[in-house]
Amino acid sequence: MSAAEDMSRLLNDDEIAEITGYSHPSAQCQALRKHGVFFIQRKDGRPRCTWYHINHPIGAKAQMNSSNEPDFSRLD
Image 1 (tube, rainbow, N blue to C red):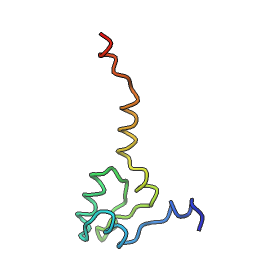
Image 2 (image 1 turned 135 degrees about the vertical axis):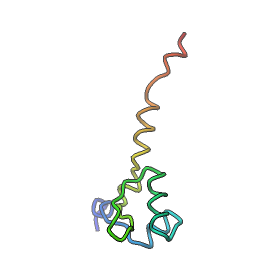
Image 3 (image 1 turned 45 degrees about the vertical axis):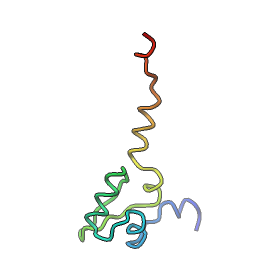
């Protein structure tokens, strides 16, 4: 399996439980949401996401963009 294929692979139930620390689907969803990880919630309530989304959470982009701006108020 190539690196690109591995990053696009969906995590299985055991991997999601290991990463979130929760076995209950609603708690797993809450943990992923809290950490900015994009996921799809299946009809049975279980979250599904790829390794790419685990390694590149949405929240990290927002933090990175906001910290790139200089604080001009400090110049006064």
